[in-house]
Image 1 (cartoon, rainbow, N blue to C red):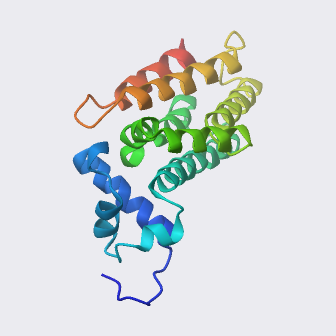
Image 2 (cartoon, rainbow, N blue to C red; image 1 turned 135 degrees about the horizontal axis):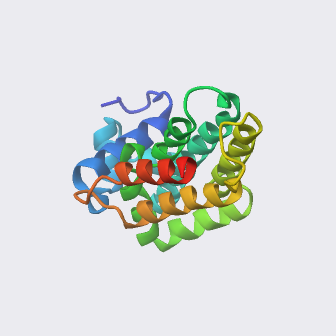
Image 3 (cartoon, helix red, strand yellow; image 1 turned 120 degrees about the vertical axis):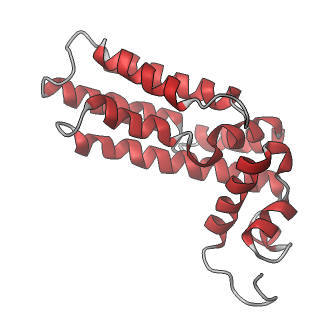
Length: 194
């Protein structure tokens, strides 16, 4: 545990990673500010020093993870013509399920203040599912230009189906339910390969 008065490096990420581990082990009900700080090995009040409250922490955790996935999705354009289209799309779609994604998303939905903060941030332009959908659409159009995706495939519809399915699986998955990754992989393959 960090001694009192000693700076803790990269506090946000340390607390976020700790929260993900707590949720992976015990589900959303196990996530409390005390559980997070204990898991992170830091002072009990550290979370409240860096966040206005626990709902703010949960919202920021979700927004941070959405933004990371959006960055990964934006990198898809650099993969056009490399690897397989399905594998490239899988990398983005499956990133949403990393580190307890379904449970973290479900947790945010059960905390009205966190859910409101997330909706407000997304409405103000924070990267989320829309940014991921746009990146997938652009990637598929680039692959069509290279002849690696059939002209009969509508990139916007495929992107919506991938993101919509990921969103559904995130909102309905909890620890102990079947792993959503195989379903996502089958969907991507069916949409791209027809």
